Image (cartoon, rainbow, N blue to C red; front, side, top):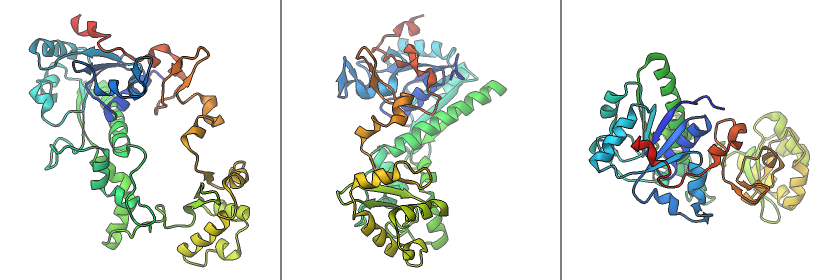
Length: 369
């Protein structure tokens, strides 16, 4: 998909939230110019290193261009200001006030380019009491209440195995709003300032807890919500060999088929007992057999919503994903193809330019034109 072909993006972001958002813009056809500090972004040095490039940096920054520049140098700043005339989007991820001190804030750049779409990604947004507080993904998850809704059996909050605030609260909202800003600029010739707060964007993800509190004026009891460990139709059950099955049989047709496969007694099928009691009864049935037994039982079922909890290794063996070539892999020559799927149609990703990882300062000629 090349819907954004001809769109030029100046990317001042680092680590995960901004780079993933601008990677999506790359996959939509945009030209993304990554502005890096002297010595390059820190993620470039993060292991593992493959053929001289950080794997993590490569996954998030393929297809982009790189310029290395000291933004505190006035001559260099002037080069950026000149470049702004031919840029459609600016994405930055500094704390509030940093870009203004550099003379590259929205008000300054908008005077140069009235159609500019300017996106700032921060933890708490550009306004409010917390705007200058430092934080990372886990901190925003904690303050939003999401961690309190995700607990172990004893009620201890569990650290998620992915960066939910960075991605769901930062990358995706940034990408969507940038595209909306470009749509507006195309129709009205007027640019936009986009203020992305990762903390505030987690509010929709806490919708179950929010609705419960709004109705009861009390916080949810640990693991009590229907979709958070309190409902037998939406639960994780352990097998005899300490592996797990995830069931999401919310609709009756899925629930009845699940009960049929596990040969559940009438008391489970009719759900006449409390969810906690039904959970214990189902757990006893599932734990009577090993993981492979249940995997074979459910693997060919299309209408049951019960799936084995696989490890990452098996993700690379999944025939569904392998056929679509969605994950990092080696080509026939043994070269790594480093990519992760984004929201964009991935068919054009074979284009070599979108797979190439930029060398630091490889495209400095752009600011010297």
